[in-house]
Amino acid sequence: MPVSVSVVIPAYNAALTIAAAIASAAQPEVGEIIVVDDGSTDATTQIVRELSAGNSHIQLVARPTSGGPAQARNDGLATSSCEFVLFLDSDDQLVPGAIGVLLAAITPASSASLGRFTAVDTAGDAIDIGTWATVQLQPVVRRKGRLIPATKLSGEALLTRLVVPPPGGILIRRAAALACGGYDATLHRSEDIAFLVELARQGELTLCPYEVLRYRRDPQQRSQATTARQQGRQRALLSIIWRAPSRSERWALARGASAHHLDRASVRWRAGNHGPRDTSVAVRSLALAVIFRFAGLLSLAH
Picture: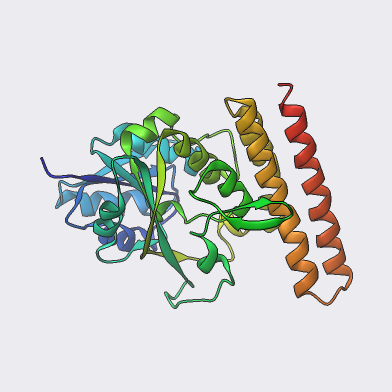
């Protein structure tokens, strides 16, 4: 039986981008495209219905109210039936051949394969997002005060780097996603990192060195709400650490989160001009590093 993939697209008021996202997902290995309309108030539902009328591979799951992207992805996961699943955001697009190269990277030990992405603006032109695009698939941990390459993309490495591809760049075994319970809908930020930490317990996170996704950056999108994102991320990290199933993993995850903040303080201080803003960021990051180390020590008694 040929390998097939379910592409799940959570959509909220995505009338301007949903048709392009669906078109990019129509690749030979894709057995079904499931659009979860998360209570949209624009023409998203109508557009999907028109597209699905002539294509039996496109399914619409309409939620009466918005439950957020994590819940929408979980609804799509519950509806899916293929061996693999990929969660594509409604304003992103898969590049031609993306599914094929992600499948080729999968091994019997893999729970998921992770590919590279290119960030684009609202007009579709590539934009520079600093080091994110170049370090996203370089797992590291901190040992003896310095960052070193990790042998695999473990939970500790994920929290040390805190850089992962968008969901559309990750192909997942459906059985592994179900074993994780899907995305944690109680986390309003960084639920993608929490999900990957869970997936790392189900099998290897295999790295695919090819570009698979065009990731749309919009100043108005949810992930760009900087203050809310930073505050939500710290709460999510504490939750990820506290819920780990063993004392050794809780300590490793806390060490990874602490290492991330130490690295951020160091990079900001070295790259900046030592002005008030640099001082503020460095001090805050150092304080967070201490907090996560202390959280790790507390977790050992949990």
